[in-house]
Structures are given as structure tokens and as C-alpha cells.
Amino acid sequence: KKLGILISGRGSNMAALVEAAKAADCPYEVALVASDKPAAEGLAWAAAQGVATFAQSPKGMAKAEYEAKIDAALREAGVEAIALAGYMRLLTDDFVARWRGRILNIHPSLLPKYKGLDTHARAIAAGDSHGGASVHIVTEELDAGEVLGQAEVAILPGDTVESLAQRVLKEEHRLYPRVVAEFLCR
Ligand code: GRF
Image (cartoon, rainbow, N blue to C red; front, side, top):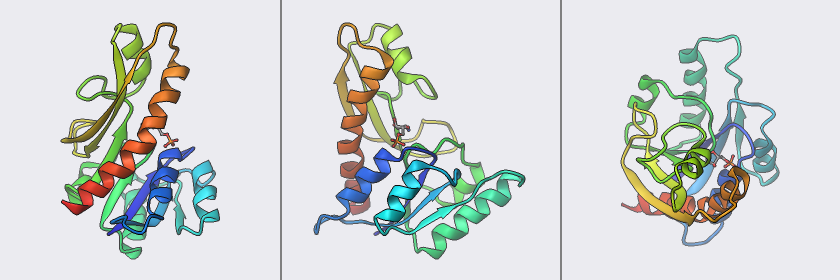
């Protein structure tokens, strides 16, 4: 199956997906890495790996026009499913409808807890015993689609947002390729 990945920055989850796709038994190949930020670190990494990349800044255009360009690039690359990996833009209902059930996202909380931003800070402030990450299907409602898999990480005494985020991120890199592979085989 051909996977497209949307990023906005560092792209460490994208890199984990690209690395996992090198295994002979991996059910997907990364057909395109696209970014709304032409300078995204992850974009240069993907290009250096020989993965096709596409950059499109939304500056100066209507959201529908920007998304049409992303959509066209994905379809041209033959993409069948999309993984959002630190893509920091909300997709329009129209885009979600056109890719219904075929967009996944990784979110750094144990959904349904802490949708949106600042997830680790909110988990620490609430005194939660665990934080973590979830992979879910993207629907029109933010971080609310069916959860396909989660990784739990204990919150330790003295944890800061940074220390917790670092441990959760490590688990994200294991979780995302596994869940994407399972999803594409189901
Ligand atoms: C990750 O924490 C992911 O859960 C969230 O954004 C961050 C992206 O990091 N959606 P990276 O760009 O994959 O390194």
C-alpha cells in the first residue's frame, strides 16, 4: 500500500515510518512526504533518504486552494492512505471527506483525554499516573476519531513536560509504524 505522510517540522515519527517501511514484510511503502513548511527539518531528511517530497506553503492562498495542491500531489504519487505526523494544520471537512477513513494521526495523549495542544503539561498538572500516545482515524472533529492503538508511559516524580515528551516520543516511534501496518492489512 502506498502511504503519504504530512509533516510540519522535525518529522521524527515520519522517519520512524520510513525506517519501518524498509523491512521486507512491511505492508506499506512511503510514496510521498509532504509539508506545509518548505523548511521543515523532516523534509530534508526524507529527500536525503530518496523518498519523494512535496512542499507547499499555504501563504497567500485560500485554504481550499492549498489543500487542493496537497491533494493533487498525494493522488499523483498514488497515495492510498495518509499518516499525519506532527502536521500542525487542521484539515478541512472537505479534505477529510475526500479521504474518509484513510487518514491516521498520532496524538501525544491517552485519548479521549487531552485532545488538542499541551497534552503532557495537562497530564502532569492533573496528577495522572500515566501519559502516552494514541493513533486514531482522523474525522472532522479534532482528535476524536476511532482509536486504533495506544502506548502508555508512566509519569515519574519530577517529570517535566520535556522529560515526559521525550519518553512518550520514543514509544510513538514504535507505536505508529505498528498501527499503520496493522491498519493497512485490515
Ligand atoms: C509528536 O509528539 C506527535 O505525537 C504530535 O506532534 C509531534 C510530532 O513530532 N502529533 P515529530 O515531528 O514526529 O518529531
